[in-house]
Image (cartoon, rainbow, N blue to C red; front, top):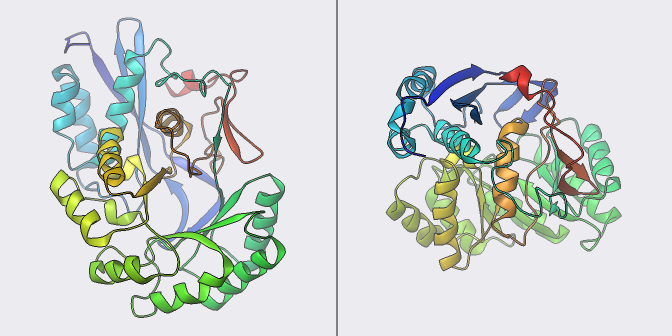
Length: 353
């Protein structure tokens, strides 16, 4: 669709409210800022979500709203011209990609048609256990396994390591590796001088992988960990802010991780993800996609796009059920799989629009 004076944009602030405080290595989250880009042209419309995580998203906080307003007033420039201006705002670039693809689609909420959007097939996903009191985490693990998840991901690195290790030991003693896989996500929270020792102590419990054991700034240590860790290393935060193709190649060649974790909101959308995927696959590095706590608007786009990439690994996607004010839609989790239930509709989307 070419640039047109009839193309209009509107920015809608839609802050998300957590059902209960959610603990991360960066503190406890109770709310999350989110904005929707609504595009209209004649009787067609499209929507995309721009969502940020405090102290993690690389977008400039001071200029964020102004940049959204810039998109609102410069939408007639067309997709590429606007896209090029959003290099320093990866979550807005991602929202713009979503909104534009939504506008082009026959059904604005079906951005990437497939057997997934037809409700005929599903994606395997891991269950997520949030940081919190050990008793609470223990209960969440049991719930996830009873719900049929093939793998459970633990957020680690913020509580006492001995307590976290004890919980993982307990889970593995109750469930074999064939019964449930264990993924860990440290969000860079392990002390650099003790990270390898922590990994060695975790290794006997059949850990599939650990995301970002130390912060990206400890690049030399990450390189050593990728080379010598007894547990496969997945890079997550290390991908944030790496925008140039040559810098991505240098990072992968230097660190040589086993996996990449792709969060479109944090690394600049689907086009950026595809570049990471191309470079990773050339080097034999596997990958999976996960969300960055988007509402169902962003999750819907991520899930549809991810399905079409045909990854054989478990994905880190869900339904945004963490929020009290999420926008209900067809995304449904059943027995550890993410489905697009065509019997459900986006009945409340008009309230947002």
